[in-house]
Amino acid sequence: MLRIQDFSSPIIHTTTDPDLFVAEFACEAQAVSTGKPYNQTYISVIKLKNGKITHYKDYWNPLVALEALES
Image 1 (cartoon, rainbow, N blue to C red):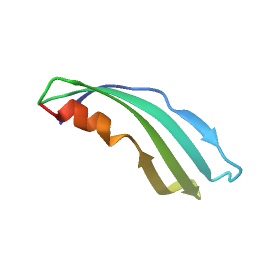
Image 2 (image 1 turned 135 degrees about the vertical axis):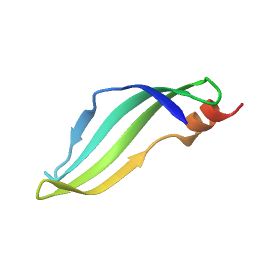
Image 3 (image 1 turned 120 degrees about the horizontal axis):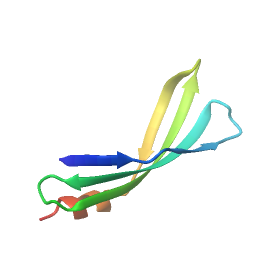
């Protein structure tokens, strides 16, 4: 659905819990069906245990996707 052009390097936000952090990054892409740009910012909350991801949750704006995919 999207032709990915670039992902930014993440900005990592640490927390008081050494196994929990927040990553902020952006995506530049183009919707294949419409040719419209898809420029999205993501926030990911990531929890680790023994160096492995045990929880990963993304937050993003669905209106950006709708705008890119609507004809």
